Image (cartoon, rainbow, N blue to C red):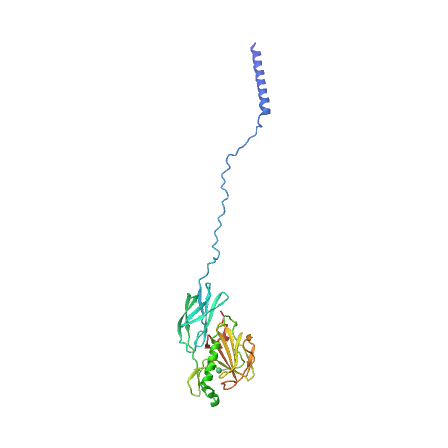
Length: 324
Ligand SMILES: [Zn+2]
């Protein structure tokens, strides 16, 4: 073969081989596309859970500690004060201890309370007040009892009227009856707000006035005297239930109203009774007429208030609400 012929053959062979390669590989081979296998995703930190600032714990149901509080504004000789137990623990019975006495407290809304009367001769000074819930002490505080200057008066009564005082048996009977009435305790409160004066007229003799009748010993006036025309109306100073409507030896025709929680009011020397025992009366409701029955030097209303049997100044109840 001549060199030119061999060269031509080589070219031809190369061409054929290239052609075969192109036909076989090109038609059956996998399409020439880039397959990107993402073997690892970029390490983007996963969104971390946002840690919100933890809110301060919502008010926990942990009960507030029980607290003993006093309403001291009327804590004078012949006055009164309130004991409150706020945030009380669960209890069946709550009592206040004061000056050697144990006073039942009454549940009222979210608290317990007691109204305690102070005798006219109660020694002024500081006294501890402790509260027991089912017998366990739950708190204490101190009460200051302030003095009251009660005026003195000498009065003269006609011998026939003053002679009424000589019937010791009748007086004892009346005192026993009143002690029985005033010794009651109703576990409810029938009054609310400040009280009203039970009659229209001037106060002629104040509560606690030290009186001597016809030269005798001095005794504190047990109530407030309101001068008024005979037959003028007498109204309930506050809501309550009539527990006495009767004629008494010294106090004459009388009405006593139970206001609950050991608090009572009495209306005396009436000329007419207009309620009967068991009646429920509202504040300002008419209960009788002014008169001079019993031991009275003239027509007037003798108005008394007792708390747990202790006589206190009725007018104090009109000055401000006495409430739990
Ligand atoms: Zn009087």
